[in-house]
Length: 521
Image (cartoon, rainbow, N blue to C red; front, side, top):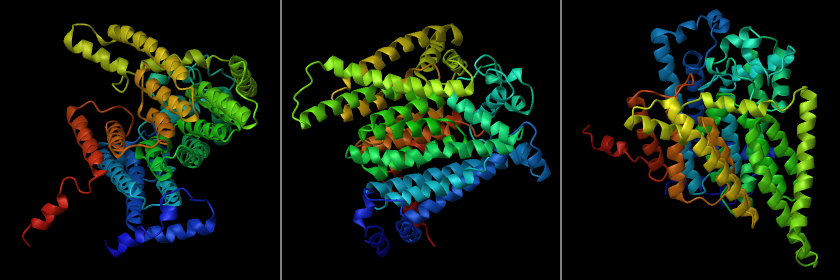
């Protein structure tokens, strides 16, 4: 063991990640130790990657149709011709650096040589450059701002799309969403409206402010994910590494400016509060998450089980014996939860001045046709072997998968009801089922199940598989949003995923260092 390795493993109490705190003296000492270590070098590599991703994004990302800021800085050349090629290469090198650094930190985390506070610091380091980036891998933030402007200017975002309010926001919305009403909850519309009131029609300022508005969600994830892991005897450091430090999560949620950041943060924080027996507060947080994006509601039925379990434990501890009428106990917890949910949602709707039209607008995702969702994969497979077109086949595969999804959700809710761990595992399974079986899926959707599932004890083999999946999904979409269409790009993404997965367990799986050592001097 080298002197550096000894330094890396000196502090087993902090290294297991179970006693990390946010105290300034502790964080200061963690920074000093980290800078001199392997994990410090990995952190700096990831930071460099974030910087390069940000710089490359000014040309290769989801840029504005007319970007006066780049023009005034004489950087508009980055968007065209050879400049675009250079920008794309810079962005991809940055993404690769972040993935390599993430895998290195994962390898270190698996042997307990990194503290929880250190990973928290690294999360902050890596997102700092991304706050100032052009939206990466998606144009959704322009849709968010356009929907906020609709509410600001007196339109109902649940009835009309961005086309009803022409202007700079409309000009930059992806063509798929121009006429689509908002599929987001009233809470998020209030945030978007507030931002557009502050920035007017300034898209650059609006993008940065939207990112800042999402950061509380990331902070909740940084707190709640390790708490859940600790509660279920998992590894807090590994959980934070997988669910938060993951480049797929940071680049898409922060770089791409997605409201999943708030939704997921509120959901996992609500689960954590429910496990702390603060059931009403937990349901309230998850309900707020629902007013951001509907998927948070999947956790609520399982929180009812957690509440019922706690009531049963309370009776046993008080010597009152088992509940004579279990259905009454369930009805009590469910009805109180429903009251909290209705109160939160009603308050958000009244404040925003909108109704429930966004529920029907959720069908707008049907316009997305990529192979990340099982219905689309099945439809493509049918078209390969038959003369049928994609749309007619999708009209069959999507309803079939909807029926299967509903059956899975109901069955999972009933099956996973006997313990806290059952209930939270049920939430993770439900989220995975939605990602796979819903009509459309996008890379940032994977942040939903990762945030919940990372809290359990995960075998090294499964971690390798998850690292490979996350790497593949990260690499197979282009910086300006669409998925790669060429087989070469897909093959390279698959190769990168395999190397990343193997590298999590074995340093230098391609034996590049060994080959370098054999070269004659």
